Amino acid sequence: MLINTNAIVLSKLKYKDNDLIVKCYTEQLGVVSFLLRGVLKSKKSNTKAAYFQLLSQLQLSINHKENRSLQSVIDTKMNHVYSSLHTHVLKSAIVMFLSEVLSSTLKEEEPNETLFSYMETTLLWLDEQSEFSN
Image 1: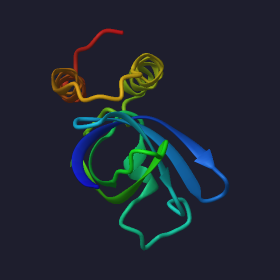
Image 2: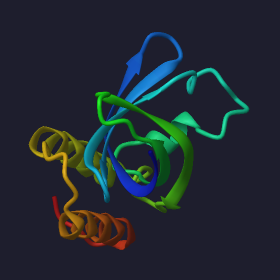
Image 3: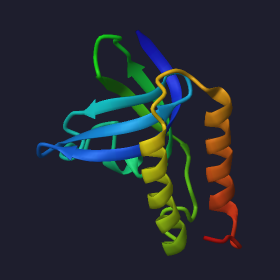
Image 4: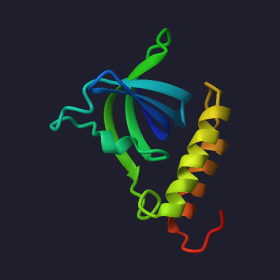
């Protein structure tokens, strides 16, 4: 079944030489893991490895099959491009900590639109702020 959904990247793991296993929290499906084949070697692919930085917000087209634990991604687009979240040292440390906590605690495989919306707006707020505390 083809599904278009927004997603937030929780974790990524290099698999073999050219593949990534990415765990995302999606708006329509909850927590889903994806196998991205050849994303680390292909320069002409629509799916870039840089899209899958921690807590990046993406728009994914997914070929979802119920009997698989690793789903496949057809197309990837950036939903929001952060201005300082991955470049500022302190914000980057907060992002790494939050992604570890979220990856450990989010286990639900059903949609929760209010939680997704909260995470989305909080990350955008953190990106825009110049005054923040640890």
